[in-house]
Image 1: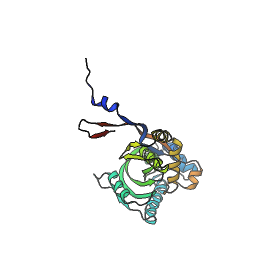
Image 2: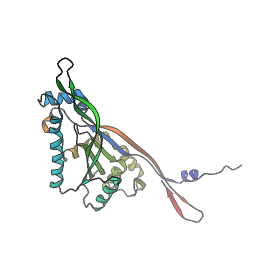
Image 3: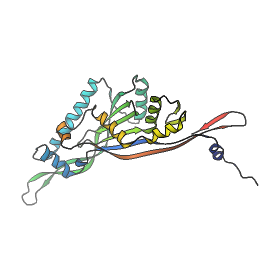
Image 4: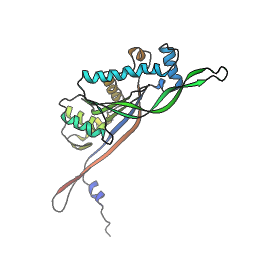
Length: 273
């Protein structure tokens, strides 16, 4: 008795490369102490010496930050564009990347209005005296976000997105396969690249070692490198007082990729990844 052979069975017997790698990585970048109302109140009252945390005092952080971004774009000769509705941001980034002549640098800055978690001041009344007083309320709002699209010597294409409203939370997007491609090229190891992966590699063992070596420490070092180059919403005094951004995983995608080459009866070779 013979059992039917599936396409998957045939491909499995002709595997040329197997690799496991971190793929896309989205990180939340936040100031943990400023995610709650009492932390915001402490920041303005006891760190900055304000009487209350109000919309005006928050604007004292966010307005200079936006002005610094606009000034930075001019000084660095970067396009500051508003993303049109329906236009994919990644497509725009690919167009800029195709014309970019360097191994590392910023491509452009994009602006888009998106929903964000914010802390706002509202007015409450004292039930005894009837006097109004400001109160902090955590809510959501549509605010401008600024996307810094760039390419890194070690990580390849990336973007960092800052919200323009206090506490100016950010996001970081990296691609593990792009990191691997850069490392293989640096070590002079021949490989065939896919749009988002590796089809073949002259040294599969070293390829997997590079994939495994993409550590939290390297991602933290990447962030620290670029945040020091970009406009920052918080002053040096704020950061010295412990108001530092920290990275948290929002979404991580992993790839377990098998590439196979099979030959048909007609003699034509084909591959599947």
